[in-house]
Image (tube, rainbow, N blue to C red; front, side):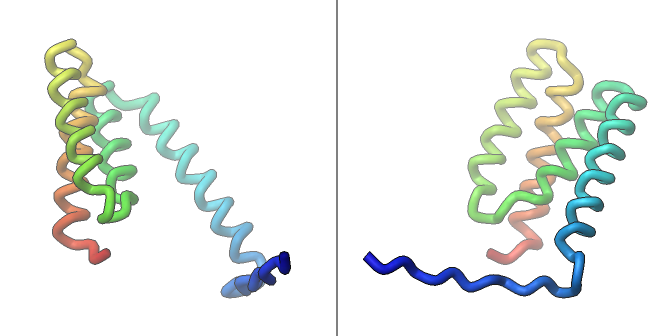
Length: 102
């Protein structure tokens, strides 16, 4: 069997992938610091909302279901970080469904 030759995708500019990796690590550290310094409910909301905005529109129904489940279970279990994270996930998925085209 002949293997297909993979086309190498050129970088937009030299070092672009390293820059993207550095930005990703910096954002992760920022969210770690914010999450540690804010009250649990606010931290859960902030992190879940921002991460929810990165979801592909194809998976919005599944993340909506996960957000509703998390919110219900979090409020029933008196876990503010989980509860408000679920609310934020639902809101972020509504934003994705409304404004992001597949």
